[in-house]
Length: 264
Ligand SMILES: NC(=O)c1ccc[n+]([C@@H]2O[C@H](COP(=O)([O-])OP(=O)(O)OC[C@H]3O[C@@H](n4cnc5c(N)ncnc54)[C@H](O)[C@@H]3O)[C@@H](O)[C@H]2O)c1
Figure 1: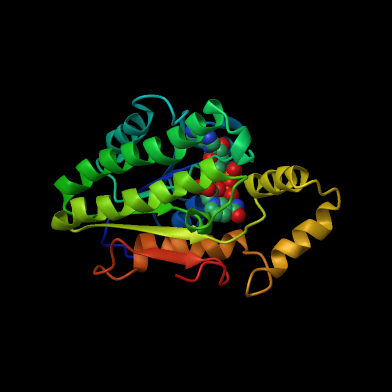
Figure 2: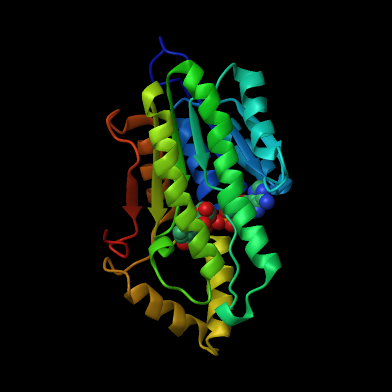
């Protein structure tokens, strides 16, 4: 697949949490648009499949198997991209973790793991990529948040609190990097039937004493104003738009791709 414009070098992207779900789809769509794409995830097997699919587009890919909750891991991933391609133009912070846990049964372990990935690792990745982008005087960062960040979900509080943290980091990073022409925005996907979403909803049904899973899922789908769940590909298209096409005056923005679930 040729780069979009033969005269410009390919844009260099890093997508985290790209062993499946939304991250894989974003990585493949960026590759189809002519970017070179590094993909990072704790799941090496899933990453190998993503790399295979990136290869099918004709684009270069780089696999970074890493637990992003480790100290220095996000920075090391950015370093790897810079070492291979000499810079980084796009960072998509997509890796995410969440666990259903009733508020009054909250555990230190669940909160620590959730915040370590969704908040701390995301902030460190923004910092590391932001430092390179500051020198380049260009770059775009997209953080994946959630409609949940503005909801009261007592069975999912660590996750929703972590995504409120993502919104906060997005605003701060956008202001910190604005003087250098680096854009930072976020995107809130609606309900997509990925591995993460399905296992979360199975646990949520159980926590609510529901054994009629399909009826429970249907009720949740009916709450979406557009009346259906999001296709992973259509959400990825919006992420790629933020990465490559959104106007250069747009920063600190939160884009809702939730079928009307999130209205602010
Ligand atoms: N699926 C939905 O309906 C939905 C809705 C709103 C927001 N989101 C957000 O979208 C993003 C993608 O989620 P998804 O639905 O594609 O789920 P997913 O489970 O397919 O993707 C998450 C990825 O993060 C990786 N990951 C988990 N822990 C990691 C760690 N410690 N280090 C590195 N990688 C790690 C996983 O291996 C996985 O590949 C997440 O940030 C999620 O919170 C999803």
